[in-house]
Picture 1: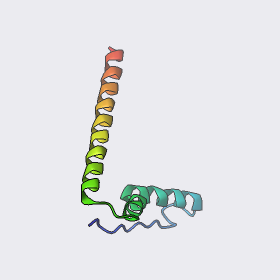
Picture 2: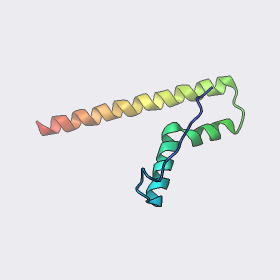
Picture 3: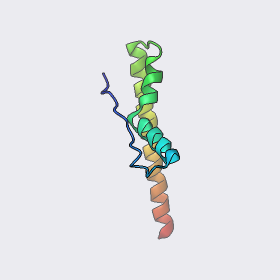
Length: 80
């Protein structure tokens, strides 16, 4: 079970700017993955489906990281 998210933003942090306060709150909820958890728990998923989804997500993350490394290497090669 995931840890409970305690997301709060004080008005002092944003120097009274309400727009900044809202943006900061949204950013913190995204970081804590509050919305994703709510969507995830909306419907029941079989454990096998959860496992497959987790595997797919990890595979996509590995591919993204690999692409980042390749692009960084290409940028370094261009400078030489």
